[in-house]
Length: 328
Image 1 (cartoon, rainbow, N blue to C red):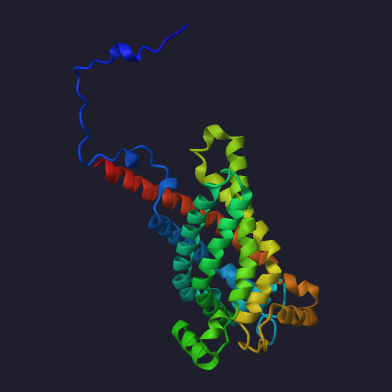
Image 2: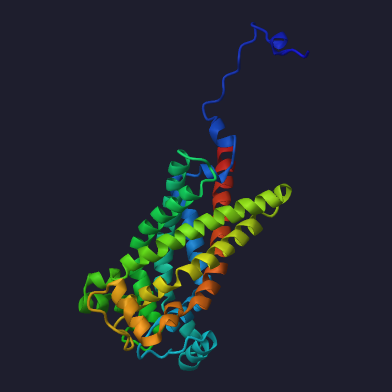
């Protein structure tokens, strides 16, 4: 039977060499991005969110036009007709109306989104198994409640500017007029609906993302490191498309609340979800609840792929920089 030979090589006369004062083994040992600090998740998330939304903004504009009921320029639920109408009335620039609001809101909102998600995921998983879908879903819900509080005002401004033909001259003019004519509360009129929409959206999104990513890694564990971006992009696309379709009815309600009074769109007395749902069904039938599902799915599938790939790449880049800094 083999025995431990380590004691044979121990010399009591040899003294251990102390480490230099700037030696940090906990930093050099592993450059895994799972060890990032709170602010590092915020930076990676901010970059990911901005890239995602700016890249897919034209699709989001088409979706907003399709979902707005009333005397607005776009009345058809056809994606092709919606795009044709925007190009005819405003040209290519019409697809980018409101992008300044998106740029200002997406970065901070996604910084909060990803940092809160990682913080909550770590806290919840520490009490359960690493592959617990409920922990991922709960962390996602906490993240969306926090990020929606940051993004909702800019989302209201963005959608009002996207409709075109409205009374607003730009981002600042829109904010000023909304606050003056409707009060600050108008910027948060859709917050409750947004949270009710994004809570299940995020739960489905994160649960699907983690499950698909884990499944893809198990299928080809030998090539995971070489194809990591493909894994994140594929899992993100699957998660984004599924979550988008499931939550489309609440997204239609959100658009109605954010665009009320613009371009002849309906105003709602109490702004309750039930009241808005009833109005949509009365005007356009139950199919009206699925207005814009196709551009919404076309937005969220590649957007999620871009977002997760950028986020993971950004996390790894930040970790690598810290790793090199620690070594030097």
